[in-house]
Every structure is written in structure tokens, then in C-alpha cells.
Amino acid sequence: MDITVRGDAVRVTGPGSAPARAEKLLKDLLHHSERGNEITDQNVAYALSMLMSDSPSGLEELDRDVIINTITGRPIKPKTAGQKAYVDSIRQRMITFGIGPAGTGKTYLAMAMAIRAFRRDEVTRIILTRPAIEAGEKLGFLPGDLQSKIDPYLRPLYDALYEIMGADAFQRNSEKGLIEVAPLAYMRGRTLDNAFIILDEAQNTTPAQMKMFLTRIGFGTKVVITGDRTQKDLPRDTRSGLDVAWEVLKNIDEIGFCELSSRDVVRHPLVQKIVMAYEKYEAKHTEKRPPRIRSGGSRTFRHKDSRT
Image (cartoon, rainbow, N blue to C red; front, side, top):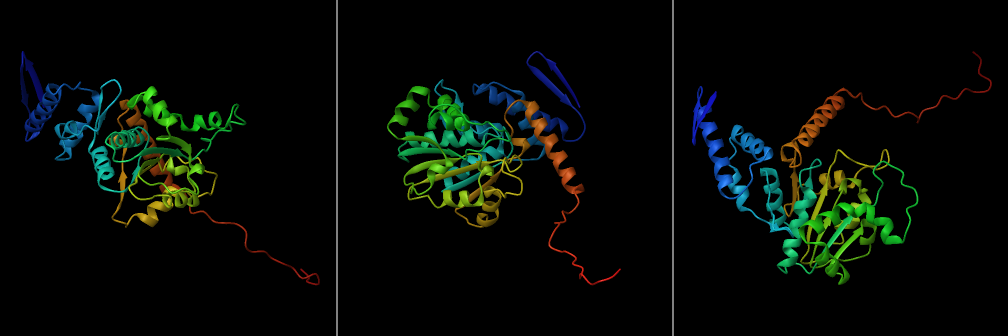
């Protein structure tokens, strides 16, 4: 296929339906730019993938779905069809699981939806929680009081709050108890009504912790649970509460399970390539891995009078 540009005219020639597809792609990107958006590599890659898969979702549909604006005025909106389905599930269901690799916007979009609901008085408070587990590293004893010890585990949540809401607004609402950022252990024994709750890094919960968390939910509450099933930091042979919840709850209509993939990565294009490379590597090695044979359980005893 050949593309020729002369002034403000673009001529596309090629076999079959290729020119028509290229024309649609260029028009989608042109209209996206006319609406005041910057054309990025991610926009082009997404529009191209949707075109090749004959998906009806386009940049215009995503561009209309503005969730909220950041403190600097930048609009937050889904950037892929997977993200759009995820946001729609949060709107429509009481509980939504957002499962996918790093960079797919799971936590950030959930945070935007929480702040939107809070500002519209749909909920009276926001509760953000994570399991406080070391990410494969031994940090030892951290200095300071209890809050300063747990803050490093919750830093990604603070970062998103500051960017969307602003540090001053967060501090004011936090002091009033309207926004709470706490480790998962703090949820035990509570009943949470009229709140928007986000459980982040849920792949690092145990089945008992996940059950505890889900049974805290009260009336008027919206819950989003995010996690990446490929990046668990639990001790060896400990099953993830996220995996168990998937099996136990997947057939309940009021609960949404949204699977995001490498196609939904919205960070640097290199991150998407890294995620795809790991997916291929892990799939290949999972297929080759031999079945695990558990040792133990059988012993041979020889009578003291037996002779060889």
C-alpha cells in the first residue's frame, strides 16, 4: 500500500480493502485531533488495532467518555475498549474486579471514578486499601510511627489522589475522615456503608483476607478490586485470594470481572512490548512445565527379623 501526501491532500492506493481501511484510520485520527487531542503513538496503535479487528469502538466513542478532570484540568477518560468496558462495569455494578497487567490503568481509572462519585455526593467517603506485603524484598524495620511505616506500601494510591484531586483537597478531606488510605488489615471488623472502596494489589491477598474484605460491604457502597494475577508476592504455595474470588464469584451477575490485556497498556509503548514478551514467555514455560509430584506419604518398614 502506498500513501502520497501533497499539501493537505492524502492519496492512498493499494489492493483490496486496504485503502478504505487506511482512509478510515486517517479520518479517525484527524477528527480526534480536531477535538483538541494530541495524537500519540498509543492513539495510532489503538486505532489501528481496532480497525484490523473490525471493532465498532473508535477514538471518538472513547473521547466522549470523560470521567473527571485532574487538578491541572486534564480530562481523564478510557483510552481503549478494555478500559471502556471496565469503567462501564464500575458504573453499572456494585462490585467490579479489574484484572490485568501493569500499565492498564486499573487503579488510576478506579480512583477517578471514586473521586467523581464523591464530588457528586453519590458516596460520603472514599476508602483506599492495599495488603501491606513486601514486594519480594525484605525491608526490615522501618523508622517512624505506624502511619509512616505503612505509607510506603500505599504510596501509589497517594500519587493518584494528588494528581486527580490535589494535595490540599486530599489533606482537608483526609483530616475530616472522608478519605481514608489504610492497609487491608484495618478493614477487619468494620461495616462500610455509603463508601467507594478500592482494594488495590488484590493478588497479594490471601483467600481469608479477600473473604473478610468482601463481607465488610454495606448499603450504598461501590467496590472496585484491582490486581495482576501474574505478579504475586505471596509466600510460596500460598494461594491468592484474587484467584479464589474469580472461581467463587464469577457467576454472580451483580459482580463484574473485567480482564485487561497487553492491548490496554497505556504507558510508554515499550511497556506494552515488555508485557507481551512476558506473556509469551510465561505461556511457553507453563506448557513445558512437567506435572508436580508431591513427595512423602509412603515409607518402607523392614521387620527387625527380616533377612536379605
